[in-house]
Length: 315
Ligand SMILES: Nc1ncnc2c1ncn2[C@@H]1O[C@H](COP(=O)(O)OP(=O)(O)OP(=O)(O)O)[C@@H](O)[C@H]1O
Image 1 (cartoon, rainbow, N blue to C red):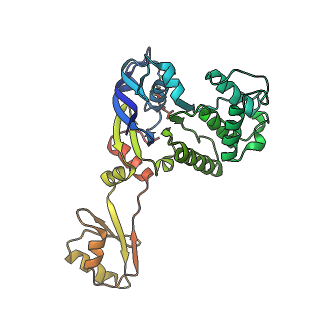
Image 2 (cartoon, helix red, strand yellow):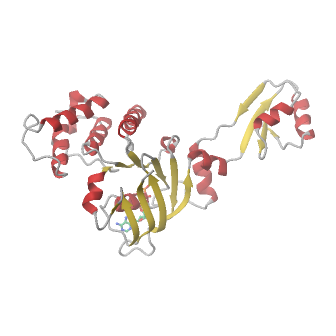
Image 3 (cartoon, rainbow, N blue to C red):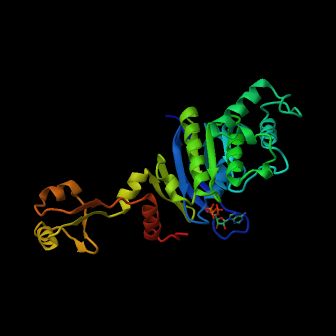
């Protein structure tokens, strides 16, 4: 599988800043991968994403995007990426379609024409197709300022996809959106990923949005603190527990003690385990159980635990 993003010893020192904001980080993102770049406020996410999308210069290091060097082949890089920034970047005075048209012409895809009807057939087809996928055809010709925040975000995504980028960079794309709009946006992005095989690089403070990504990379104080699958992150950090109970709780706890299993009694009997599976514990128990529950840690639990253990801020 081709490396879509390659980052090697990337350093960014802002003018007048005492220390670098990004301190020599390394990571790769494979073609088609859904990659979440997480970290607390000020960790270096926006700095990194801005460098990768050629909107900010780096201090040192090597970065290639879809095989193109970000310094030597910046134009190629821009042709291959779509970007959704933290702050909405649509022109509120223009209609949704006009925003898309300007963007497409800016990318050199088409020569500008003053009306939608005068644009080439291929452009019109693509815009209508993309609008249909999210079900917002009706809003296409309305002024952007009349649309809800969620709809505007969707239009930004359409706009960023108009040139069929290989990589979509999303910098906190759902910030400020309500739960329904967030869900709708993710359903749409998943459709795009499935249909186009687009590589997605996401930064978000909603850790649950990264629960189903292929890989999570945590940046903390300008350094990579973790890079691996969400499952690995949970396994590495969270103690696993099984929650049990019985009408004869004393018999149950006695049995656990006899088995040499550490446990504590809270609302129920909680049994932390390591080097053994929950199934093995349960198979050994003779006492009749009235409750059997696995503790299902979330990615957010693991993330907070990770930052606490590595001495980072959790905000
Ligand atoms: N233009 C700048 N000049 C000097 N320092 C900056 C500049 N932009 C960012 N920084 C500093 O660089 C560090 C990383 O900031 P960055 O915006 O990349 O973090 P972030 O992880 O995106 O944070 P957030 O989650 O709050 O958006 C911070 O300490 C920030 O204060």
